[in-house]
Length: 437
Image (cartoon, rainbow, N blue to C red; front, top):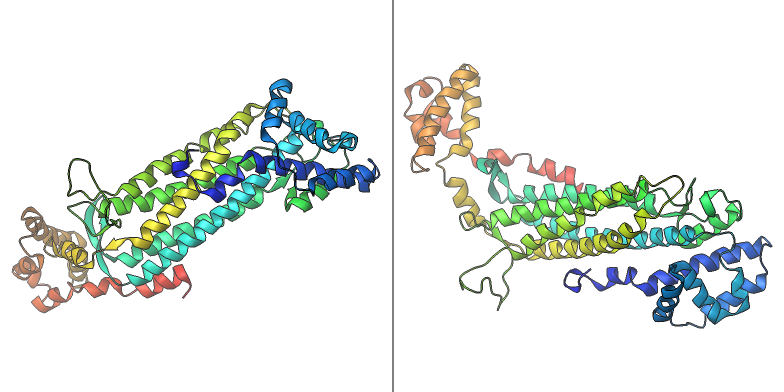
């Protein structure tokens, strides 16, 4: 992953040093368990841990040098450990296969990554809730098909985003639990040369669950579900980012990204204030989602295993989690500093001459005895005049001057249907549903 879209804590999870640290812990904990079962001498486990407790620097360059000869990463790592520990290291990896180490380590890394992403979501949810409450009753226009529909509040827009990301958090909790799985079952997963109790011990030490049946690898449906969840979160990021981008358009300008002192919007046009952060988030979301299809295709491995999934996961594991971590942090900053313009929202609400109240008049006419078809016809013929005037005419004025309408509804009754606050009478109920208070 390129540094531009990376944050140190998440990047560290995917460093060679961290990967080799996890590999060592898997091997050493397995050795402890085997020593406890009498399979290997206790002194071997003690010697391995004694060396590790001296705090040796993981020599990535040396491991890479060995791998250049062995063409096998796990063997290269074990050889390096043997060079440092001595004869007792020969008991490492007893009855294990490379996938036991690789798959369990990947599960540990994805679990660590999920914990960071959950913290990211918590930070985002807190900011969205704060801004939603700030604009709980700030009137704005709701749009369907990009066209003015009926009034909403800006707080409701943000409450919707909060609910969506809360669902995403729950999905990630589930995905984390599913991916946090350990397999130490040996070649083709039969435990022929290693006791299942070794697997249980390693799983407990790493905070993982045991894989009920692992063939030679942990089944990749777990990974597919994990990366699919990341893809859904990315889509939610894009949804909110797209909303901000639309609201920042010059013709709308109801909200915009914070524009810092000294910031430049265009190399050619000094007046520009572009939604560059949310445009960037749209692109980052695409990159996270690009990991989903390969993860799904990894499910169908040959027989007990092949390694067609391996190269894929070396890409998508770091790239998807690092990118999503960055994107969540960036979106949190965007919402935290979002510039909101209530006056412009009100002007846009009023721009189309009261058309946003057409449904209320329609319903009032049906209540007054008109058929729905006649009520629709009466309102629409006046509404179209307002539409074609680009809002210079008033729907209220036209309806009050329409004899067929006033024959059913008095002028003051028509005016009552143009009350903006009417649309917000259940905002508290929605906020209670979303925020629980």
